[in-house]
Length: 76
Image (tube, rainbow, N blue to C red):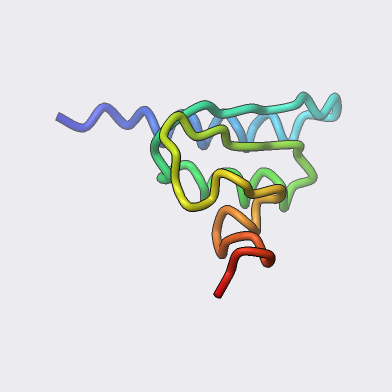
């Protein structure tokens, strides 16, 4: 049964990104399904990041774009 937790996390990240106080949003997850929320949050001026709990190819990512396409220094 789908619990829609990812959707709730994305909604919270976007809502916090729209807040004038601009809280730092750190999402700790092993699921990349929240990346669209990170992109939207950053587009709205939020300070949002993802910390993966599983080692993946993007563990050295410094910016959100590096998570999506891989850091420039290790892209073949």
